[in-house]
Length: 159
Image (cartoon, rainbow, N blue to C red; front, side, top):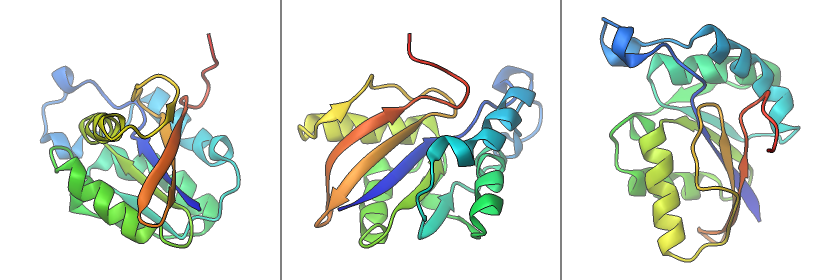
């Protein structure tokens, strides 16, 4: 059994105030703080790979993690906003065959993945949320998800 850490990008600048192409929208000040806290927040798994949507906000979210783990980031289009979540989950399952994988993506991919897992009756611990900077740790084995648990964004606490 291993894990997929499916992480929503940290807080970014507001879409409504950003005038450039959306894929170039960067993190906000809060988002940069969340990204800096991510390596400690996730603990010590030795990630086999760090995959990210090519969108700037996702790459910036994972840069501190890549530096801390001395691992290269791998931008992949199938984690980009609007990509089919079913393809993302299938490819992540293939990559997480032997060691934990971390993937930074967008809210739509995360919500669609959780909806699929819930419909498949996979036990999920925690609110079906995807706050910016949050993670879902999916336990995988034999090419399928056995369960998952929610990890709040860095700097937040349980209510």
